[in-house]
Image 1: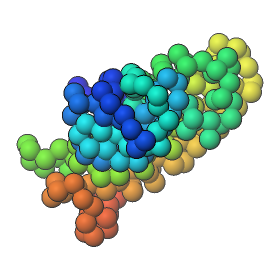
Image 2 (image 1 turned 180 degrees about the vertical axis):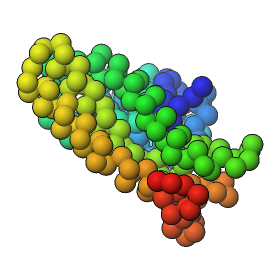
Image 3 (image 1 turned 90 degrees about the horizontal axis):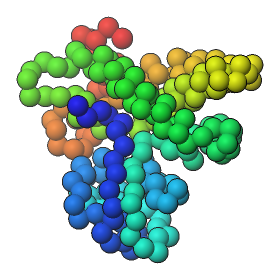
Length: 208
């Protein structure tokens, strides 16, 4: 079953100064804005997308494999400078913890939106209009899991402090992030005035 923050991989079939095209892709239009395309270990923030194109400031010289991620190493480094050290925090560790966070945060969001499953056709998970509101929350949870692992591997007090700090940041921020989720109730792909103001947290049938 697909999850909210699943990575997407492919190979570009053409490129220009505005981004890349993958003629075999079937992206949801503009659903990847704010995500990152990783190409040859370089992260490009996606500013727009169609069903087959990704737009970003492009410096490519040839068609390449790409991977689209919700949070990448560059995003993590903006929060925690140690993430720039690939020896201290290997890519394999981030990859492993990304998969765990994808599962854990997906379950958290599903539990929060469960009251919106009022019929068999409407799926609130596929109608979140501002998924990137969860980006920092995702990063905090990912960093807490990275430092938890490092504290066990190295028996390091500094890593244990990092785990505690990011676990607290996640705990402090996750409820606010969930409360700010906007749902596309009429499924037109646009956040209209009512949907912007009708946050999940304002709905009486939800206890949170």
